[in-house]
Image (spheres, rainbow, N blue to C red):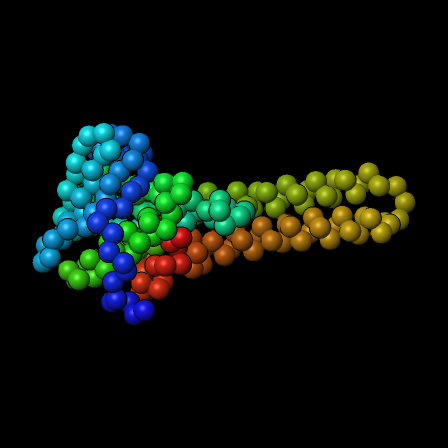
Length: 206
């Protein structure tokens, strides 16, 4: 499938409602999203209880898709932020069992942005403060583990034995992993940047 080929058409995509959507007037546990229009497409969001929001794509400053990776794949947290002219940002997030539908919506939204010549407004990555927070947290966690290992070995009387070396290997390996992760998050994974292609965008989608 090429980048310009369409996914199977879904009239409406179901998303989870959140406080940014409720603040915009969309009520209910779920939100129905759809992209309509030809030359002037718009994203329409409708609350399951009440409320409707129509966002012309021409009014969107940026959209940014991101994934907050958990220890397991099923624990990954996905979202897409939308910034509009002089408006507070909106957050599109999947339901518990609707991650694939969410991914199809974001790809369809990116395609629509590309059709109207605004693909340079499609980004991927965490917010900068999140990148800084996660990086500092990992460095502090690595320092704590290294200190705990050193303090534990200080209480060991006599020469190091086999279990001590295993302990050093495990704690040292985990410390190194956290330090590498803190550096990697500043690379291609964490900071926001424009997407290079739809394939690039898919990397932060379910």
